[in-house]
Amino acid sequence: MNTFHKLSILILSIVFLIVGTNALLSEPIVMDQNTGFQLQWEIDNGTITFAVSANVQAWIAIGWHTYGDTQPKAMVGADFVVATFGGQANVQVWDMVSTPGGGPPPINDTSSAVNGTYDILSYSGFQTSDYSYFIFSRKLVTGDKAGDNDIVVGPAGLDVVWAHGSSNDWAGHGYGNAGRQTIDLGTGSTPPQQPDWFGYHVGFMFFTFAVLMPFGIFVARYLKESHMWWFPIHIFVQVLGLIFTIIGLAMALKMVGGISMATNHAILGTTTLCLFYISIFLGATSHFMWNPQREKTPLFPDIIHWIGGRLTLVFGFVTIILGMLLAQISQGIIVVFGITFASYFVIFGYIEFYKWKWPTKPDGYHLVNGSF
Ligand code: HEM
Ligand SMILES: *[C@@H]1O[C@H](CO)[C@@H](O)[C@H](O)[C@H]1NC(C)=O
Ligand SMILES: *[C@@H]1O[C@H](CO)[C@@H](O)[C@H](O)[C@H]1NC(C)=O
Ligand SMILES: *[C@@H]1O[C@H](CO)[C@@H](O)[C@H](O)[C@H]1NC(C)=O
Image (tube, rainbow, N blue to C red; front, side):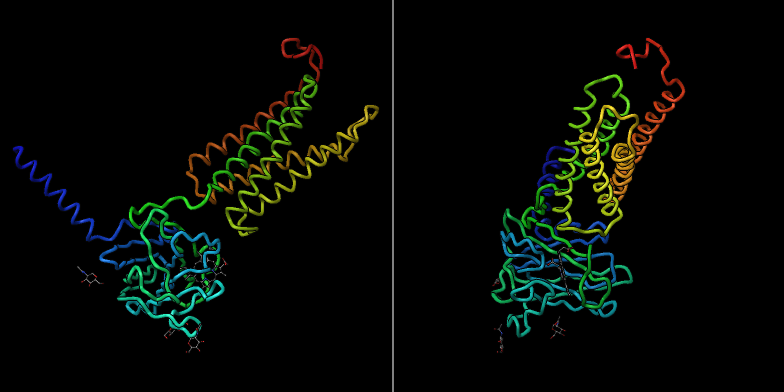
């Protein structure tokens, strides 16, 4: 191929690229992994066309807030477009808005509580037994002040809400069937809308229960006889864990937007934290009740503290695994964590066995300070 040919192909490609990108719907943005709820759009001469689909047989809808709005409640102050289905090709698309002065449910722009106008220019759609799709156009700025929010293309993005029903009946979507995502309509990018609560939750909790706690227990159980510093280290480690879990819990509450016991991870996590705090309290109690004259370790609080601490460790591990499954973290990480967790128990078990088999064997090589 000669240079002229190469050059003309290059120029043609660039021309197609420029012309082509103007005439296409955007790359789809997946709003929800579970249902493959996705959104595409195209803006042309002041008119926006949205294509919305999900792997559900139910009503599907999107909505958006005004440009730069920081309204924390997803359903307050939003402009909605809802598709309901009455059979395969029988789609109806409604121009709706948040109930004035409140949030859910959305109501028709044309209802007498709003007195807005119907501003969907055209629409189409279809549904199968496991898929629903609709496409519609409207002006970016409709002029309907009562019923619509202007759509603005800019770096702050469009604050989009999405939802699908659990059936074709127009009724509430229920927990987990709705969400929110800011999209820059110009670039198609989705800037993270809020701080990384999830990442911090995982970090603080994982470090506490996978690293700090096992270490703190190890120090208290096995270094007590040989190292005077076991006690301050034990206290320091568990108090650090206490602080970390309080932060981790706050992050979890931020992440799900309040207290929710909807998953096994949440239920077991709460149980683990209760056990942890009770164990810390019992540990403090045993410290203050300690009596050098005592002949044997009392059941309360000392031995209960020991049992509580070990239970917390086991509960913590199971909670972490449940959390990993919930977040659908890659299998490799879960397996390696599981093996690490199992090796902790092998190590603890081995030391217990060793201590039981050779309780005070005067083997100078193994001694740290020359005495037990
Ligand atoms: C019959 C219709 C609907 C009812 C009864 C309803 C009801 C509710 C309720 C009670 C909440 C939780 C409380 C709150 O955040 O204020 C909520 C949250 C939410 N709704 Fe709706 N809603 C409806 C339709 C829609 C539609 C059409 C969309 C979007 C297109 C939507 C998007 C959301 C979002 C993003 C949330 C917050 C996230 C979540 O709770 O999972 N809703 N809705
Ligand atoms: C763009 O929109 C305006 C008004 O909405 C209309 O008058 C004009 O013909 C449109 N231009 C094209 C190229 O469609
Ligand atoms: C919206 O308006 C249409 C047509 O008037 C009506 O059939 C429908 O039930 C209304 N929807 C709601 C949620 O009020
Ligand atoms: C809408 O219009 C009707 C009839 O004109 C009126 O009764 C109602 O109060 C209006 N609603 C609002 C919110 O303005």
